[in-house]
Each structure stands twice: as structure tokens, then as C-alpha cells.
Image (tube, rainbow, N blue to C red; front, top):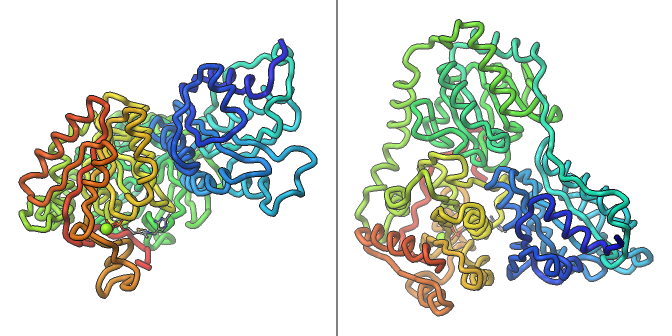
Length: 554
Ligand SMILES: Cc1ncc(C[n+]2csc(CCOP(=O)(O)OP(=O)(O)O)c2C)c(N)n1
Ligand SMILES: [Mg+2]
């Protein structure tokens, strides 16, 4: 049967199990999506269209692919705005599918903005559908890229959505995605080294989450009796109530990174950016690098041994080899758990103290501590914003299940937390979903808040309202990092709870520490009926949090 390209794409998306597509209009495949019954989540700008789909892929660990559409072609206004979302997805390695209009044949010289070159800089693959009958071929290739290897965004440009082809000529079959298992010799070499190490440390990255390997990570860590740290993006890959969990950041993490003689990195590229640890004295440590992508080997640090393959298959192979070598008993290394506990207690002491603070304005840690108390940490979702909320929550928030918390942002684009909280609600409707933001993140979100009301997305935005932009190092304020560009109108001048309340959100403004828990409870309860909530906590400026090892605070 002859169909047009847009209809073909819509049908293939359905075959691939895509349940909805986020969008900002216009895109020439949207009408076909509508006709074919693919629901569209219409955001209020193109960046958020990408970010919601991106976050959906992250939160489901790529088991459900987020798909978005936005305007491209000769009038690529949408694409220019969506670029920020794609750059963030590419930077963080998220398997999101972006569909846009392509520049039609004959029009490639019309505009100044070169679509193809721009898109290639932010994608794992940029496909251009130059012939209608190639629709199944390009979609197959796209889903192969999305479901195999190192994750990353794929962009498809459709220059002529109404061109037709024969749907029966090359019938589409969904793509399963493929994994590879490591070389047994590399596994043996890694275990040799592990058995020889005095003070090994597991450094877990987001690849563990994408591989669905959290249980395997825990099993290996317990067998080998090795402490574990996770990256920001992998927060939750290892249960944070496990006695071997050291942390994401903070003094105790620095202590273990410094003292370790062997780093077993699993599912991390080990290429630290602004929001991750460097490896101190790398030449003096043995680095075993387990990764799906061989091009990460010897990237920034000398790799002693590489184990290439899927993180789950790798962890299983390491565990099996270790059990075989140590008759099932693992590595006897003394009371590692007690040492970890002592280091964690010491590292977290100053935060635990302010988590119980009654001071006014409210200390932000009191809000985080109360949030942990109110939420069912095995059945909820929390994410941070760029700014102090990232730094503070990643220091103290207890994450007990993978994606109970989404850490994001090798480069952290303000505003992403709203997209993440929406995606979490779409992925796990029964879970409470909370975005914690400062005023800068809130500013980015404002135009998109209508979506939550229209779509009845019961999420809670927690605003740590401190009247200024913090940011890096000692904060933007006072003698801190950027003293000239930190002050905005704060809670004394603007009542954001009234502004957002007028839109239709349930809103509250809280300045009493004792009111934090009741206010959060009310918001979460109201969320269950599909109504979004915004709570403004009047907080002090408190730029205190765990540091990244080996990073300048510039
Ligand atoms: C798109 C984008 N532009 C600029 C920045 C740089 N930046 C990081 S944090 C921040 C200010 C954060 O202030 P606020 O939201 O009030 O958070 P606080 O730390 O006060 O809680 C800025 C401007 C960024 N992360 N993203
Ligand atoms: Mg602020």
C-alpha cells in the first residue's frame, strides 16, 4: 500500500512501542501522528519538547525511547531553539529520537544557518531522508543506534513528509538492540588486579543504570567487599542505604578517591567535566575501565586494564570469575563497611546538623531532610536544578532505587528539572515527582507551567527561594564568585506563590521550618488528583556542599 512518509514514520513509532511524542509546533509529521493516534505532549517551547523526551529516555534507562518533534527545514526557528535541548542530551549521552523537517532539495542555499552541520555536532547520528522509500531503512538504523552501544541522541530530518512510498516493499520489524560481553581474558586480568589491591574502590557511572545492572553492581561490591561511589548522573545506581555506599560527593568521597590504589570504573567514561570528580594521582593508581565504548579507554587517565562490553554482562562476568577464584567467599578485606560508615558519618555530620535546623530564613538542608522524610524513597522521583540545589541534593539526598533521583548535567542547562519531573510522571504515573529549583531554573520553567495544568500532571515544584543566583564555588553573592550578577527580586519583592497560584497550581509559601512537612504532604496529596503544586520555601543563602575532587571551583 502506498503511504506518505509522515504516516510511515508514525506507524513505525507505534510498532516500536512509542506511546507519545513531545513536540512544539510546527513539524510536518505532527498531523500524521495525530491521525495515526499517537498522543502528542505539546510543550510551550522547542527546548522543552526535546528535554521531556530526553528525560523520558534517561528515566526509563532507554527501555522506552523518548521521541520529540520540532520545526526545522528552511524556517528552522524551532530547531535553533531546540539546539539547547539536543546539546544537553548529547553531552549527557541520552538516547532520544528527535524528528524534524529537513531542508528540501534545492533549498540548501536559502538560509545562513546550516542545519546539517549544526545537527551533526549534537547527535550520535543525523539521518536525512532523501528518498521516501528509505523510511524503514532510516528508522531501523535510528532505533539500532538508540538501543545499542553508548547511548546518545539521534536526529532524523524529513525534507518531504508528503512524498509517498510502498509500505509493503520493505516491511518494518522493531529493533531489539544488541549488547556485547567482555573478553574473558580481560575479566581474568581485572580480577587478578582486584585481588592484589590493598584499597580498591568502585566508581560507578550511568552505564550501570542503562544496562539495568544495579543488582549486579551490588552483588559484585558485596562479594569483593569494596566501597562504592557513583557519579552525579549515576546517583541511585547503587542503593545508598547499603553499608558499602560512600557517596556522590563530600569529604568521605574525597577520602576514598585519594586513598584508593585501584579504581574499578564501571559504566563511566572517566572523563570528568565540571560536575564530576577527577581521579587524584591517576598514574599511581591501577585504573580498570569497564565500558561499552572502547574509545573511552585511555581517554584522560592511563587505563591499566579495560573490560569492554555491556555493564551488566561485565559485572556478571567479574563476579563469576571472582567467585571461582575465591571459592565463593569473595575478598576478605577486613571491616570495610564499618570504615565506610565512620567516614560517611564524619563527612555528613555538618549537613545532618543543618537538616534539623530551626533557623529562619529556612536552611535549604532542612527542606531536603524533610523532603526525604515525607517521600516514600522507594516509590518517588526527585531531581535538582543547576545551582546549589544540584550541589546540595547530590551531597545528601538518599537515593534507594535507580532513578529515584535523577542527577543530570555534565553541562547543566537551567530548567531541565521541570522536563525531568514531567517525564518521570509519564514514566511512573503512580510515583510522586518533585523538581527542586532555585529562581534561575524557575525562570526558565515559567512558560511551560501551563502544560502541567492542561495535561493534568501532578508534580510538585519545590522552590528554594533565596533571592539570588548562587551557582559555583562560594556562591554568586557577596564576596563570592560573581558579586555583580547575583541579585534578583526575591521573596520580599515578589510573591511567586501568588503568580503561579493565579495560573491554577496549588501553591504555598512557607517560612516556618515546622510548616515544611505539612506543606509538602499537602502538595503531594493534591498531586495525586493530577493537580500540580508549587511551594516556595523562604530560605537563607547557604552555599555549602560537598566538593568535586580534582576540580578547580572556577
Ligand atoms: C542555560 C544556563 N545558563 C547559565 C547557567 C549558569 N548558572 C548556573 S547556576 C546559575 C544560577 C542559579 O541560581 P538559582 O537558580 O537561584 O539557584 P540557587 O543556587 O540560588 O539555589 C546560573 C546562572 C546554567 N547552568 N544554565
Ligand atoms: Mg537562588
